[in-house]
Structure formats: structure tokens, C-alpha cells
Image 1: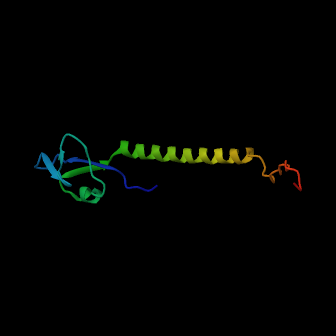
Image 2: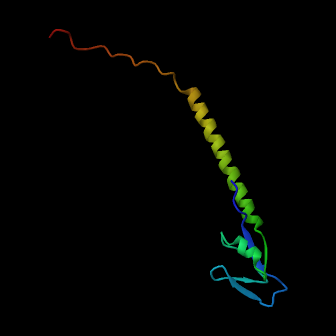
Image 3: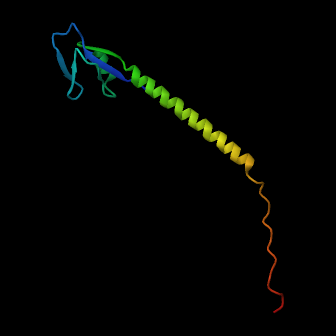
Length: 104
């Protein structure tokens, strides 16, 4: 699963502005790291007044979710394999005897 890393940004200390509004009205300050919207990563990196870094908690969460999905798939495959091993072999169904006498 190759997703772009989630980014966070804040106004650089060298900027003359204390608050910058970017990416559709989101406010970035010198104090707080704020999430960069998906698809705006390249613009955030190019912005001269923003410091950008990878949002480590988002990356860790994505990796954990990926590991959980892999583990779930492995367990489902094991359950299917066990079910196949335990299933009775298919045989032709037994014919029920005809209870009605013939010729009547």
C-alpha cells in the first residue's frame, strides 16, 4: 500500500507573517503543526513561509492498519483451509426407498 505520507505544516520562524491562510482557508501558525490536506503536499513543500514535516502519528496509524489487514487476511485464509479440511467428503446422496407399492 504505497500512499503519500501525511504531512503537517506550520509557519516558519523566519516568516514575516504569524498566521498564513492556505489550502482552501486553513490557518497555519508558528505555534501549532496543522495537517496539510491530501493532494496539497507538493504545494505545501513549495510554500516559502511554511515548514513541513511528515505526520509521524498518521504514518504509524496507516502502518498499523496495514498490518492489521494483513493479519486478518492470513486468519481468514487459515480458517478457510481448516474448514476445507474438516468438511465431509462429498458422496452421492442416498436414494430413499420408495414407500408406495408398485402397480397400484
